[in-house]
Image (cartoon, rainbow, N blue to C red; front, side, top):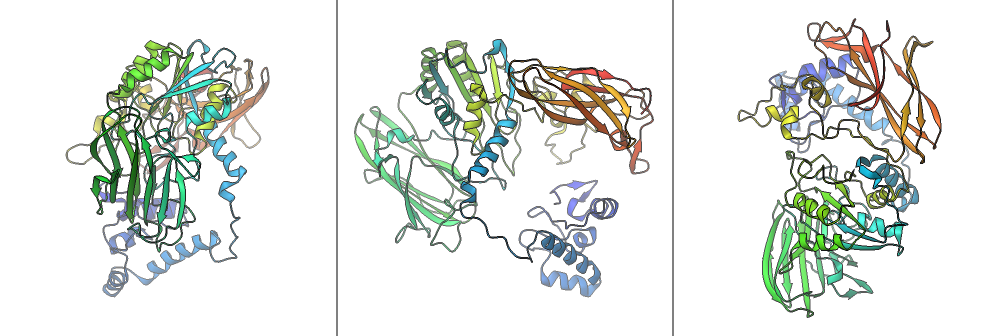
Length: 620
């Protein structure tokens, strides 16, 4: 897929050097090249440069423009034939013209899929910090746990954009802890803070029962007017949905297109105290909210972007009110959330008071798909009200664990030294809550490693020195010094370096041995031993460091890594194999890769800034 930007002055969709010379000729790519959505800028120019498929609307690759270009000789028929051949080849390889395998009904509900989702989540979680071995949680001593934060009771499963998938179910961290602990430990919850540009979702505890379950009656219609008989009816425990391009349910019936639908939620809500409540509805397209027949919010029209509408109403403590929320989506992305602000509520105070009464506090903080996703940039963030929440909770209870749920690192500097244990859980998908709980409780030993650097400051990142220039030109001033390479060059200490990740076990690296194997490839061997009391896995990493290179090169570069599972006390021999490509550099004079004749040092360690062993072969 071609990107949106220009490279060396040419749109990537019209870049003959990238698409034809390098990709198709030099690398022998036999598939087809597709434009990112709306990234094409011409017919003949793109076609000649190697673009095979324009997406999504055919603004330039349509019959009239293609025929015109053929008639004028701007493109040849053989060029069209090649593009069709590439498109068909991929379809044949994908089995689209052969017998179609019948999808097993309910496969996405299967235990196999659940286990895959769980293993992906649990293996990716990174233990960033664990002072005084606060983790894993000792359930023999901990009787009361305070679960706090905007990402505690809600499952933040992924970022926004085309990659967004709406699963059949999702597990929040609090649900995961309850699943694993049952009634053996008292678990209490406080919201603590609201992520910026989000709403406080009305929890199901404030709704009366519908069909034997606390929540709202939800009627889903195959039209945009909540008309006729609903396609199906169910109980929704809360209104907190970002369906994107999916229908709100996979067997949606009655709609010609699954992106055109409406929903009516009805039920009864009880006010926890007397006062003025601010009701909030975050939505795209139309939404209408009524309380006891009074219309509070009525924006029944198309709206492409999700925004928050608010209305204030006085409610009496303990009184039950009728509530109805209507919503429609007229194609495209769909989002609807129902929230409120309870009067005279200090979220941080509630959280700190709960933390004081508990043996342990688990703070689930971070970001959401409103910050992280396709189509927008995200600067490194200080978490603002969440930062204040963390500092106040750790004052109230020194046994505080912070679980960061985000796709990328925020800035942690205002509180990182005060918190004894920090876990980076990422957006962990539908089984994320169960995976987080098992890591915290020691049912699974953390083994994830950071695929990026956690910087102390935005200014430490190479990408931000040339970010968002007024002329929309990026010079890539970091050059070849991307990520940890930049920190190495400028002697900058990371907060948590690339490749970092702790374990409940301890791993000892033996002295490496170097030799050429029978395939004439460089082979590095060493022994890895688990000296801890728990079985676990370590991701051993091999970096190479040129010692006397004739060209400018990074101080070191990751060339191999391996995840090794070891029982307590067990040792295994780890073997890394390197080939000639691992020692090459790109020569801009010949536009190709060259073998560097310098001597290399081989570095083996647990992260880019935690090197445990080195060896310097006399020759490679």
